[in-house]
Image (cartoon, rainbow, N blue to C red; front, side):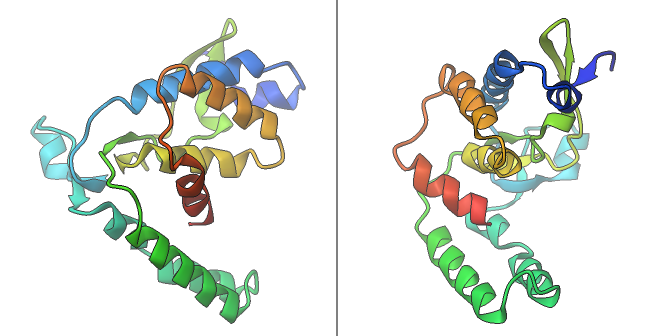
Length: 182
C-alpha cells in the first residue's frame, strides 16, 4: 500500500484530528456489514463464498474463549495478584451474562493506528485483518480505545466520526468498559 501509516503521522506530532474522524467513519461503515453467529469465521463458508459466519452460536462463548488462560498469564507474570484475577473473572463472567443481545457485524479485530494507511490526508487502506471476526461493534471500539488511553483526544475524534455514521446504543458506556476490561 502506498501511503503513510497513521501511527507515523502522530509520531511526527502532526495534527491528525481529521484523520481520526475519518477513521471512525470508516470503521462505522465496516460495522454495517452484517454477519452471522459469532467469533472467528468458519473457513469452509468463506471458501465457498457463502455468508460471513462465526464459529460460535453465542457472543458470550467467544468472549469467554481463553479468558482463564489470559488471566492466568497476568497472574503468573505478577501483573495481577491471584485474588484480582479471580475478581476480574467473576466480574466479566457476570457482565457477559447480562450483555444486551448483540446483532453480529464484521469486526476488524485489531483497530490501531499502525493498521491505517493515509495518503493526501485521506485514509486509503486498513491492513492486518487476521483477527477479523463476527460480533459486537463496541468490542472493536473498546479495543481501539484501549490503545489510545494516553491520547484520549484520538478516541474522542474517532468516536465523533463513528457517531456521525452510526448511533451508539444506550448501554454503550457500560458495555465499552466491560470489553475494555476483557
